[in-house]
Figure 1: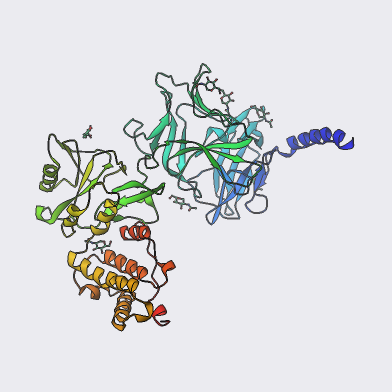
Figure 2: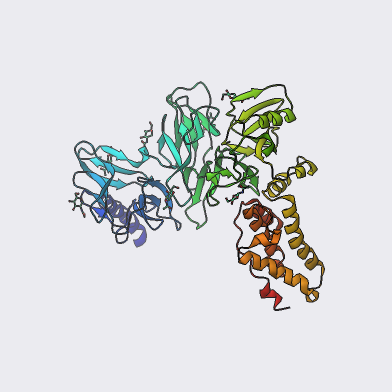
Length: 539
Ligand SMILES: *[C@@H]1O[C@H](CO)[C@@H](O)[C@H](O)[C@H]1NC(C)=O
Ligand SMILES: *[C@@H]1O[C@H](CO)[C@@H](O)[C@H](O)[C@H]1NC(C)=O
Ligand SMILES: *[C@@H]1O[C@H](CO)[C@@H](O)[C@H](O)[C@H]1NC(C)=O
Ligand SMILES: *[C@@H]1O[C@H](CO)[C@@H](O)[C@H](O)[C@H]1NC(C)=O
Ligand SMILES: *[C@@H]1O[C@H](CO)[C@@H](O)[C@H](O)[C@H]1NC(C)=O
Ligand SMILES: *[C@@H]1O[C@H](CO)[C@@H](O)[C@H](O)[C@H]1NC(C)=O
Ligand SMILES: *[C@@H]1O[C@H](CO)[C@@H](O)[C@H](O)[C@H]1NC(C)=O
């Protein structure tokens, strides 16, 4: 009997206690280490400091989950603050970040009549009320990359992606509730027109009163001013999960759910665009095109281009040859088939052939690339952007490159082959054919020999050759390998490193073929290979 009677009483007293306990009064403050956050009554959300880089940021996060998921960040483009900072809810109703030196950064303020209280609500909304107890500020009105149940996104409102899952600064994509009732996605900094959009939902013929809404059960829809749902993106779910809609750093809009009774991860319930992860325009930056490899985004540089920053895909690629003079003889054209790009042409030739298009670009000093499709040749200047591979699209990007590459190999490769672009990227390097042959002979010769031979029988010369290659590599004298022939040093080093990895005795240490391709392409960094002497001595 006792527990049953006691239970409603405990519940009631808990509710009363909560109302007082969770009301933040002016004069309260937070510090990153000792009193970092104000929780919601349910404990699911919290407002306050969270770890960011080497310091702290202020925001709202799911405190009830083992891995804190940040749903809102104050001043997201400001650098993190040190541990001796303070978040002060002042008596005049401002929420300010104060540094130990006294510098202030305003996060929110109650304009008229000051503030009487602030609270972290169970919905994930942080609100400030004035002395007349009217809500005067709410975090839901200033969304960052995430949209929560009971929040509204009305015309003109935008969610901006973050830089990454861990860095919540403004990224390169946005989703906008448009005046025409469409929820549309664009790269940051482009006009809001069809040519730049890459995803979205809606129906035409709507006014500017359409609002995006998400219910507690995960029902996601667009509703108009008459209260009619015009598009159901999901129909809601029976499970009592937590939901959030986020425009992720890769430009994709995802509805996530999390089962609060399980320590699992977030599950994706709905996704847009849902057919190609390369659709978000500009994912790979300038002069680079997006390809899907094992369901993941891969970024390929144009031939004779190299990544500006290997760590940052969206930094794009730059030309690795000097284009100072305009002699036709110095250049050739490399085709990159089945790729679509922004068409920013300055000149069009119609009813022509791919060969004539090539020739027209070579003849024209201003032409740095051309796009050829269905007999139409459009001349372009660099940088090319929004590139991605579309197997079903016949557009060929014709890239003007320095002549010392190896274009003859192009013709001998089967067209439409998936491996083609890898092969091209590997082979279209600044290495002359001679140098290429020398290195490949030196290294793969050893490799082939070793794979076939019995380890104990490794002839001395081979071992010495191997060691010599490694020594040249170690001392930075790779030129010796190619008799000081003029070659692209970077590419040579890449090949030698890959070669040294491939001839390791221990099979588990050798990279997979796919890895080798990515290494040669420059898509992934190549770690320094171990010295061959370390295993030679054991033979
Ligand atoms: C987050 O990314 C921005 C933009 O790339 C960068 O300036 C900033 O330093 C990064 N912040 C952290 C904490 O890494
Ligand atoms: C909060 O800010 C006010 C006004 O700047 C200041 O007077 C007060 O001392 C601060 N509170 C704390 C705990 O630093
Ligand atoms: C804040 O104001 C809203 C109405 O604007 C009200 O519903 C809510 O109860 C107020 N909060 C507190 C803690 O008084
Ligand atoms: C969202 O819009 C509905 C309908 O207009 C409104 O009742 C509700 O208060 C809004 N929610 C927020 C958090 O502003
Ligand atoms: C959306 O779903 C609701 C029920 O959840 C239904 O009543 C409504 O007719 C649907 N609307 C559309 C346009 O599909
Ligand atoms: C390629 O780039 C590297 C360094 O970025 C440079 O040393 C090399 O000369 C370049 N090759 C050509 C052909 O310009
Ligand atoms: C060529 O460029 C113009 C202006 O930039 C554009 O309107 C046109 O659509 C482009 N041509 C093609 C074939 O895309």
